[in-house]
Image (cartoon, rainbow, N blue to C red; front, side, top):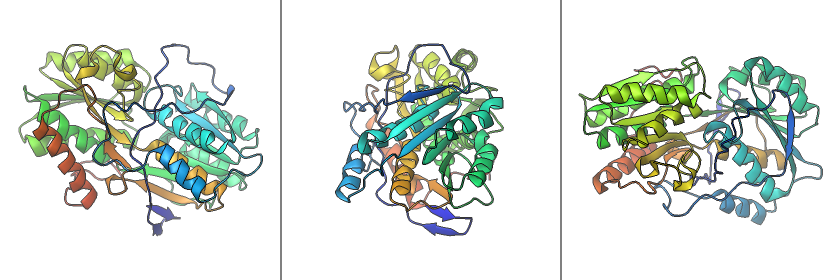
Length: 389
């Protein structure tokens, strides 16, 4: 759904649901805020050993081919830049998915790209300005906390198309698309999976920052989804001050496991992934977030405990980036809100890969996804605030 300003909606068509991801980088060097790294890296192919989730539509390769069949080409000198939220483009979740949407479009159409990895919130405005100095046609800013600076930049640079991921504005200029996701649906799917697999009746979720609405939506809907399976289930929840502290996430998971939790959902970037890894390394179930963490956090099945990664609750950041880049190239870019949800395959779940998921659990998860898509299932969480209804 795209809403022009705050009132006009049009249907999103031909959306995608198979993940193109690259393996995470183990390098702990976080770089320097404000530095621009020119890149011509192409998106890596996702693995095919696990098949597609039931809700899958087109892959990005197929979407690329469809665009080329329609005659879409990058204008001469076309350029797309990306400013990440705090963290790196190989974080295995949120930043990486945006980067892969950009590089998939780069590989498809052959334009120039660059990115800046943000180290501190204080760098947001500077990084946007630095990126704009390269005169991009499109600038992607990734994360809720960049919304204010992105709006100011869009208003000051009407000839640049801005794609703001996880951002919201009451009003936006025609050159600024702010992308929203139904994270409550993703969290609900994760909760259904967790409660279906739990034998102890206790599950946990390691969240990111509580002042970021998408995180709150994931955390609270995880609980309501779990309660739809087991009304008496105990859900342990924690928020963190950073998305880039996997050791803290592992510590949170260890505490939950000590209280009896046998499934851990990571809803906080690398911090959440640390919690998922801590659980799976002990032979307990983990559920990833944002993209298919089997290929990132678990290195395509090479990392310890990959057989206990049950699934990942996917929000199609790559889809939002890819399709809006195409819209910019074809002069069809419209400002306003762009929403992805289960109804248009923007929210789904990853293949089970090495995990031995019982058929009845797999069937329930797919029935839940279909119910969310059809509107037959309500998450019980406000899709804006993330608070329980």
